[in-house]
Length: 288
Image 1 (tube, one colour):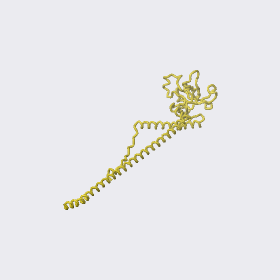
Image 2: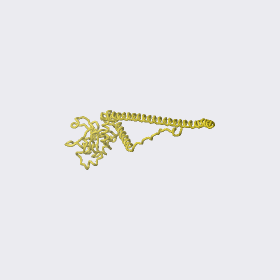
Image 3: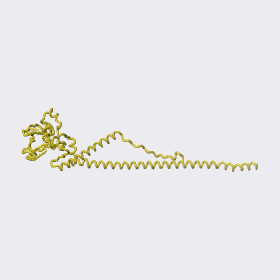
């Protein structure tokens, strides 16, 4: 066969590169789902710890995590705006997650460091506000005065609490048997993280982080399988077409060779015919 017939028409198409915008979208989705996964794991762990804890908190290395459950600190209704801007902890809407630095072993040093404007979390019980039930409250310190017993009388009140409420009074000289005592000081708060974690641990959150992603993942895998099947079918069709083209080339080459052989055969038979005809011509001339 000639060189032309020995070559095949099979060509490997280069792999298509992803466009830049597709790469950017992939990175954004990876980061989003990564953060979602972290929030989900932390939220689920927090929920489990809350169920095990009698007061619904999670304590790690002298820091306690809690959700804000009421709107008493959701907005500022009673504090001067200029003064309010200087406070590190401001609005605490419902479902905000807060980190509380617990009181520790040195109670005196902890109380001495407190100041007006700090947000504290404490157990509280009285006849009027809680009907003798102990509750957990997170409010801002409005006043601190010494009680003459080596301790302080601390008054706390929610930023959004209006009207004649004087707030809650905590006497640090009293022990925990009084059922009113400070747990710690709020040092960090985040509503976006808290709301996200709270949502992800709810029934709708379970639907969002488990069922929907699994459905999307299954759909993605099915689309990949369909795409691979189509590409495989297309590759087989191209291979078959190339194979047929190669066979056509071989047939064409064989046809050309047969034609060449026939031409050579005809060319070889021409001299014999001339030699057979020449004696007749000579005999005819002799008779004359």
